[in-house]
Length: 410
Image 1: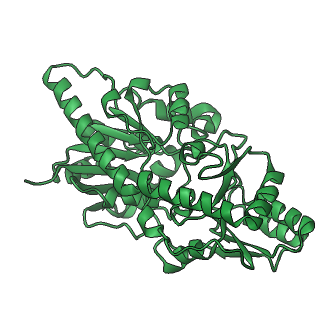
Image 2 (image 1 turned 180 degrees about the vertical axis):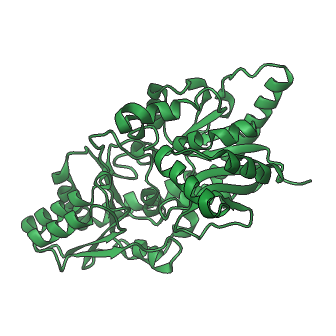
Image 3 (image 1 turned 180 degrees about the horizontal axis):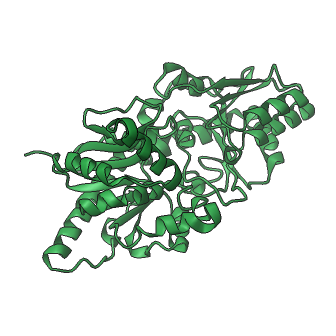
């Protein structure tokens, strides 16, 4: 018997930071994936055979018009909708999985052409900061999907509250964390012996909400307070905050204490080695003025899986992954001095590093691994499909409660 087909839809397949989408596409066990996207993005690690790229199908003047429609109005051209619908239909899909609410709104004409059961994953900015973009146009752009899509997946309870506030019907929302490939980062050989240098790792796009600038200012204070601690920071990633980070490094003379590696591909062995060489992981997530915030940053879970003690913040869904004092240390978003204090504690206390690191690894490997979470995702697929078919057969497309398949993050 052939596996049911899931049609994944995302505007760009696949951004370098979106390995969490790639995992959901490629790690299904009881379903088969096809992908439709508007354009290609740099990450090619998750390319599959059944991949349809809209802007690669048009030529000449039509391509110029399509590009203009996308860049100015974020709309699909009618010819593109028909061609894409024909391609998707040829694969006999059982349901849609739209990644990001913004992308679901973009693909709405295609959904209307093929009204399959539809699941929409929410990932953060699409319901936190995007609704306030362009004088509220973002809110109007997305709200069109609320009544037509069948199920919305919120990564955390915090994100669910934001979704309800935004206007998504509560009965359509399931809390489901997608998970990361925790087994890949498992490092049972880790030792927690005190050594020099004391290696501090931070991985993520260099941007204000990730808080790398706070970490560097904390490092400067650590150097002043405890020059005997040979602390080194490695920042993995690139992004708009880089010039500010370079300014801080220059201001506090941190050149020999900070390494900016730039982007390292997720599947590069060097990426894994960064976690193995580290002694502590810091990810100082902060809510931005436009309310932009995170869900559960995947790099935090990667660090946990590798057995690293984590210093982070009471931000968004992070407390749903880390219990303060059990799996790591959580600080208030403005408590930059707390990073310094926590680093000193972890440097001096081998037992604390070991206790937090091993508990974090157990939490990530048992509860947050993509294999565990994918089984839950496929149960959601099945439940959504069955519910929609049942309502259709009864002549009733009312949206009912999904309480029987609520997944949670644990």
